[in-house]
Structures are given as C-alpha cells and as structure tokens.
Image 1 (tube, rainbow, N blue to C red):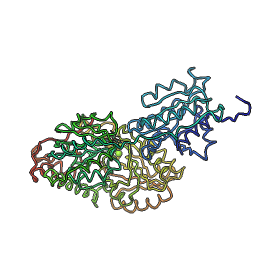
Image 2 (cartoon, protein in one colour; image 1 turned 180 degrees about the vertical axis):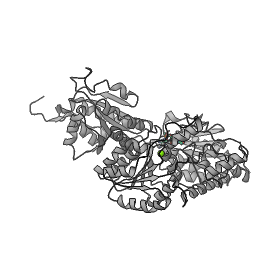
Image 3 (tube, rainbow, N blue to C red; image 1 turned 45 degrees about the horizontal axis):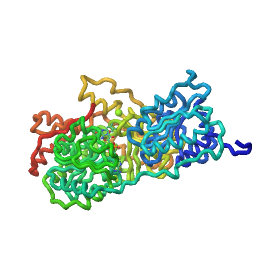
Image 4 (spheres, helix red, strand yellow; image 1 turned 120 degrees about the vertical axis):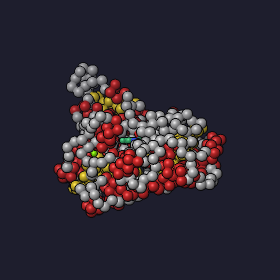
Length: 599
Ligand code: FAD
Ligand code: MG
C-alpha cells in the first residue's frame, strides 16, 4: 500500500454498495454493536434515508413490504442479540412470500467475538433457516464485497440475505478502489417461450371439460385482461388465491373469488365440483389439507418455477412459462365456446353472493359492523390507493368487501401470516409512493402489536389513513375455537382506545361507533391525510363473518331448523345453496362439498 493511496471506511463502502443497488432507505434501531454502520449512514445521509422505527420487527416487516410492493430489495438492521432477533418475523414473512430482503445484524467487535461477551453469540445458526445467504464478515476489506454478494443472492433466489457485521470492521479503512458493486450486471431472467404443443393440449382438454375452472394466483399479476379473455371465450369461471384478489376488478361477473376460509362462497361451491382445473401462477397451500382437487379428472398447471410444477396435484399437462405469455398463447388457441349450464349456474351463484355482500355493506341501521366500514372506506379510495393489511379477520373481510381495481395494490403477510404487518407495510408504501393514498387496515389484535410505530408515521410526516377494526377479540382465532375447541380461551381482551393512542403520538384520531357517523369521519380522514397521518378506530360488533367453508344452506344436507338458524345468524335469507343453481340449469350435483383447510 502506498502512502498516498486514497482510503475509504469499509462501512462507507458498504453503504455505497447499497446505493449502487438503488436502495434509497432502510430501517433499524441503533445499538453499540451496529454503531459503526450508523456512522456510515450519518455520512451518507444525503443519499440513503435512515428510517428510525421503534421496534426492529417493524423495520423488517416494512422492508418485506418494500420488496412486495416495488420488487426492489428491502433493507433492515438490528444490533447484536435482541436487536437482530427482533427482525425475525419480518424476515420470515419475506422468506415465505418469496421477496428479496437484506438484514444487517450487529456483532460484538472481533476482539470479543466467541468470548461470551455482552450480547455476543454465534449468530449464524439463528438466521440459518430464514435465509438464502447468511455470513459473518471477517475482514473490513470483504465487507462491501459480501454486501454485494448478499444482494445478488437475495434477488436471484427471491429470499432473505443476512450479514453479521462485527462492529470494529466498518470503521476500518480500505483502499477506495478495492470494492465495486455488481448492480449494473444484474439481470432478471426473462421467460418468453411457451411450448405451443403443451398449450394446445391444455386447450383441447379444457374444450372437452364439462366443469372447468381457471384457478390463478399472484403469478398472474398484470395478466387480468388475458385471464378474463380466456374465461369469456371458453366460458370457464375463474377463482383465485386470496393474494390474487385485485388482478381482476372485484365483483367481476365471471370471478368466483378465493377458496377456503379467507374466501368467497362461489369459489368454495365450484371447486369441489370441477372436473378440469387450469392452475396458473399459484401455490395454493391448502390444496392437500382441504382435498381441494379431489374430484378433478385433469389438472393443468402453468408456473415459472420448475419446483412448483406438480407440487400440489399430479399435473396432466405442466407448462414451464410466464403466466402472461402462456395466457396470451392460450387465448390465441382457444375456441369460442357456447354458454354451458355449468357457466350459467356459476354466474348465477356469483350474482347471488354479490347481492348478499352488497346488502351487508349498505345496512343503515343496527350495530356498526365491519361491512359498513368497508362501504365508507370504498367511498374515499381511488384507483391507485394502496392497502397494507394486517393478519386476521381483516384479511377475510377486506377480501370480500374492499373493492379493488387492477391498478390498486393490497398486500399482507400471505403465507407466514404474522400479525402486526398492517402499520409497517403502510409506512413502506408511503415511503415508496408518497403521492398515492395509503391505508393501513388492522384488527385491534394486530394493531396492538405494533402501535408504537404510529409515531414513526408522525415523525417522518407520512400521511397514512390507519383504520383499526376494534371488537376486543382475536376474531379469526375465536371463530376457529368455535369450530374446534371445547370453549373460548385467550381470544378476548380489554379495549384499547386507539383514537387516544393516535392522539398520544400526535396524530388525529377518530372513534366511530355508529353507521351514521361513518361517511363524515371517512371524508374528514381523507382530507387530513392530504398532509398528515390519521387514525379511525371503528368500534365494530363482534359477530362472526359468514363461514363460507361451512355453509348450512343445502336442504339435501341440513334440516330446516339448522338452515333457518344459519340464515338468521348470518342475515343470509336470500343466499342460495349452489345446489339450487345446479338444479336450475340442469347440472348434475356431485354432492361434493367444500372442506376447510386449517390445522
Ligand atoms: P404464492 O404462494 O406466492 O405463489 C405464486 C406462484 O406463482 C408460485 O408458484 C410462483 O412460482 C408462481 N409465479 C410467480 N411469478 C410467475 C409468473 N410470472 N408466471 C407464472 N408463475 C409465476 N389464501 C387462500 O387462497 N385462501 C385462504 O383461505 C387463505 N387464508 C389465509 C388466512 C390468512 C390469515 C392469511 C394471512 C392468508 C391466507 N391465505 C389464504 C393466503 C395463503 O396463505 C397463501 O399465501 C396464498 O394462497 C398463496 O397465494 P399464491 O399461490 O397466489 O401466491
Ligand atoms: Mg379484533
């Protein structure tokens, strides 16, 4: 090394690698073991925005949300020991929903490592399971290289990379020319090829089918037009996974909704009756446990990932392709089919269900229910609004009552299903899309887990509309206990006045208790959120939303009293069993019923 060689601190080089990859913000909380990284962030503060969260978990959940929304890597950090382990829920969320996230974890300085020093432990095993890349940095010179490697791997494998950084290393100087970022070389694979012979086989099988269904997942995002064209041309009703809501506009007349529990009745009705399923861009995790495909005679699958083909059911034809490309080919090959009794029965069933949902939403008297809150919410949204959803009943109810267009975005913790993601996800959404209207929607269980970070919205001036559905219970779990347990335990809790919590952190809060107050409060919130965050604590009643996985409507299966009680409990007088429409249009009823896929 010559004396006049230009030097840079390894920590600064690390942050410059992040910048080269387009990272413009990251989340975390400082601590002794990560303070050298903090120093680098201070020096680079004009180029990369540090967001101080109040719990590392919120930082990691927000980083996962960044990646879900933008496709770009999300970054969060925590100090050695507890700061890092607090990240884990957000990291698992990223792993389970296959999005790239980088976690920087502090470590005691190299002089104290492996010495049972304060907050010091072997961190690699902690992050081994959650990550696709997981290393402890050993030298200052390798730090920027490892960060670059971590980001490349996270992108290539759609997963989590974890880098543990002994605190002394980022402060050390390395030659300024000794590092580079590979961001300019990185490319995402492009899949243009669609095997024409397999596509034709699929069309031939679909054309012969009596009860075909298209079952799509989030791999079809952006291909709503092609899905709708194929369905319309071949008269095949469509269902989706819950996360794929919004790929077609909600209440589309040919869309059955999603199946299982966070679900719609028409999808659960149709699925067990289907003879042929085109399963596309989807990894429905309840497939086996709910025996969803038990009556299927031919299963056709399209996925971009070879590991997914044949995973959930034996595939008669499997096509490795991009969903949109494949759908374009299928639309081109598809014959125009006549309206079939199966198509008519499903369309009538969809209409009947939509009328039921509409009726709930437009109730003007009685106790305030979540349904009317969604109606008021739908009135203030626009085509570009983004919704960060927590986990619990909010998934089920937003799935049914939040009306989205393909230009909207909604997201949650889909497969890991961790509570607490609503507020962090909204922070991420507003940071990435400051000009779009952003909502966090949470139950009172989920909101209570992360409510300290409402102050983060105030601190960074993030005008988010937070809606908390308060009913003093873990509703989703309470209903599971109704189905499986001897009684209720641990599912009810004391009330929190979230409007006062909002007030305490410097945000305007509203408490709504009556249907008649909704429109005014939502209109005010919309105005306030042009410049500041706001919270609406909607005090909803605690009754169970209709269990579409266990409908008691069909007189061939239930006695008159059971049906009458069920209809009364769920205000479902006008709801028809699918058997009614199968009968009306002359479709043979296989007597198959939906099964709940839970635990
Ligand atoms: P993923 O699991 O991400 O799968 C997407 C698939 O698409 C993958 O196989 C991928 O390889 C493929 N793919 C990606 N890109 C492309 C492309 N360009 N072309 C082709 N293929 C591509 N979901 C339900 O459906 N019903 C429920 O009842 C339900 N209950 C839930 C309850 C709670 C409380 C929560 C939080 C979630 C629930 N979910 C439910 C969500 C569920 O856990 C799964 O996350 C979801 O069903 C998986 O959706 P997916 O298959 O669309 O997404
Ligand atoms: Mg609740």
